[in-house]
Amino acid sequence: MNWIPYIAGAGIGVLSWFAFLVSNKAIGCSTAYTRTFGMLESLISGNHVEENPYYQKFKPEIDWEWMLVLGIFFGSFATAIITGGFALSWVPGLFEEKFGYDPILRLIFALVGGILMGIGSRWAGGCTSGHGISGTLQLAVSGWIAVIVFFISGITAAMLLYGVIW
Image (tube, rainbow, N blue to C red):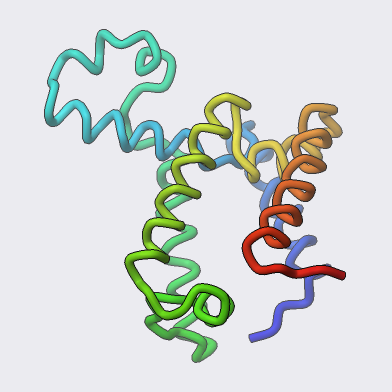
């Protein structure tokens, strides 16, 4: 299914507005991963997590952001099934063209990228959705700066990895 970007953008804007209306919270996801890691860590270390100052600020619990991530997963899956676009693929076509069909290499790239994104979002106090959607929606200077850096970084990474030059 080909989404019209303007309609998708308007939909995200309506969702953000609705989130503010019903919960007085901005849309964001990265804290859900922190909370999940804290829940997993508490299985191993027990009370140590509760005493950690970081986890006192971001309690390892299922909250609305965690449910948002769960909803994104199931919503994306349902949309892919409904539109007939669902397909299992270990290596995306563009990655395969550049680096060959190697699921382990793809997994390493995805893991390293995810870790860097997670570290960056914790340092910045938010992720692409928190700064990019909610921050710019509120006309926050930090959100606009973050979005500019996201685009510059994304374009640079694409050019370096895939050799794309305009």
